[in-house]
Length: 114
Length: 114
Image (cartoon, rainbow over all chains, first blue to last red; front, side, top):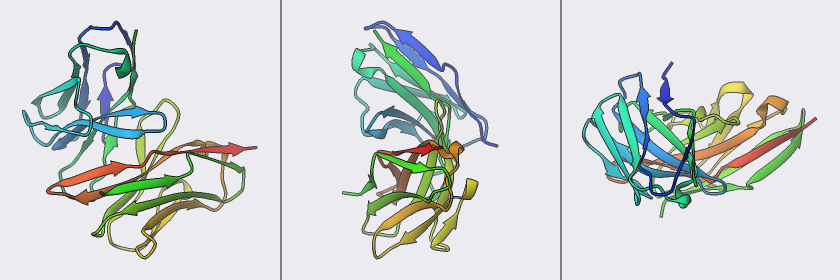
C-alpha cells in the first residue's frame, strides 16, 4: 500500500513564525501535492510538484512556498504564519501526470496560528 | 470553467436506508471521475473511480456510482447505510488542461442515524 506520511499531526504556532510541514511518500510517485482543507470550501491546491526540484503554483499559493529536494519528500513552508492560515493541510502523491491516476493522501496536519 | 458541484453539504439517512450523494461536473471533454471518502481526523482515500470503461463503477464498502454523460452526473449510492459510513465524501474530476488537473467538490458530510 502507498503510504504518505505527514510528520506533524497537530501544530500550534505564533503569528510571524516560519512553519515547515514535512511529507514523505514511499511509492516512488512522480507527483506530490499540498492542499488546504477548510469547512465548506473543500480541498484547495496550494502547490504541486511533478519532479524533483520542480514546482508549480496551485490555486492559492500566496503566503506559501515549497521544496522538493528528493523525490520522496515534499515540504510546505509558511514564511510568516498568519491567523488566516489556520487550517488542515493535506499532503498527497500520485504515480504520474496521466489522467485517471489515484491521488493518495496523508492523514493531514492541523495547524493553528495564534 | 471546469467545475464539480456536490448538491447538499450535509445528508442524513437512517441506518439501513439508501445513501445517495449527488455530484455534477462541467466539462467539454469526457473526464476522469472519482469519489473519495474522509473519515474523522484522517486524510482522503479512494472509494471508486470512472476511467471511461463501464459506466457503473463499483467501489469499496458496497458503494457504487454511475457515470451519466447526458446528465453530466456521477452520483454515489449505497443500498443500505451503515453507521460506519458516517464520513465526508468528495467528488473529484480529473481534466486535461495542458496537463491533468484534479478538481475537488466542496464535500458532502453523511450522517447515519441509528
